[in-house]
Image 1 (tube, rainbow, N blue to C red):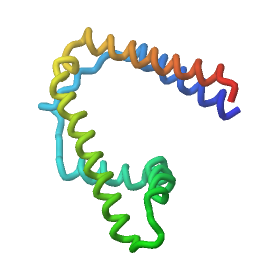
Image 2 (image 1 turned 45 degrees about the vertical axis):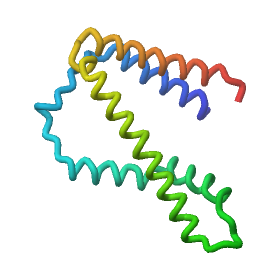
Image 3 (image 1 turned 180 degrees about the horizontal axis):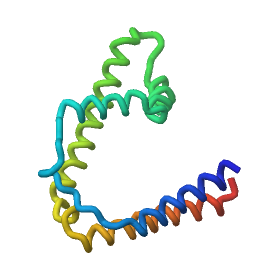
Length: 131
């Protein structure tokens, strides 16, 4: 039931995205407050259960119980933050390079169709999977 419900939801999201009217993203008219955006992003990440489960599953494999644990956790935490900073910076750089796609109605419609199709495809694959 959960699998079929999830698949149906993905298909529904895909159809909604496919049919959505393209909306231009205009950073100039948006009321951007960097501090508020930072706090919102921080709260989303700190309360994200997937991130918590990922870290809880990944971290113990790299901890040596015979050595002091706090320095090991500090190294792992700094490494993860460093890698995440590089990845997110690359996303931001890519977004600035593809900025023109966020202002062109034809490109926005193509993006809606592409991602709508991806969601529908994911829903169909999920529904047809044996697990």
